Length: 215
Image (cartoon, rainbow, N blue to C red; front, side, top):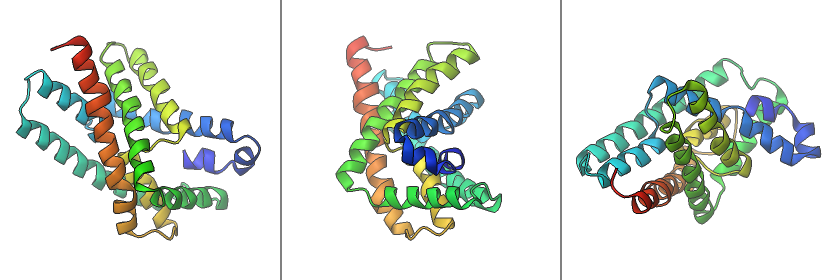
């Protein structure tokens, strides 16, 4: 996302809508596709899945908390590590891509709490709709299509995903962004995480449980 979109400053200046679409179509849809197809654990998806299971009586509160905590910590450690590896591999070595990564990190860490929460809520509503959509098909192509449209939409609209930000902000920091770890955590990760939880619990798991009933 930062390499392709960030390395196209002319496109961003002349056609910001198309630039946002390019960033949305490349990167995060591929990430969730790999998570779903490999059976990996994504915190934001787990909030929806485990809440749905709890509402159906299939899991208890301890199991929900364990899934949330372990996936969150694992996602954080993995994201920061991959951000470091991306810098070590010089994936944003061009001045334009590096400047884009720094700008992304700075902008995300500067969001007002309310805006970060709202963007997080709307983001995970779309992400969990993508996860829900993958459950409606057994084909690989069907799962990819179910993932692509909601994820592309949230990135294009500029919503906030806590796990994605666990990569994007440290990536910019490692490249020189004037952002501290406390600014990242309190200025973005916490409000976005709370918004992500609210979106999954209220807008997807809760709303669908009310609409369709148990199981």
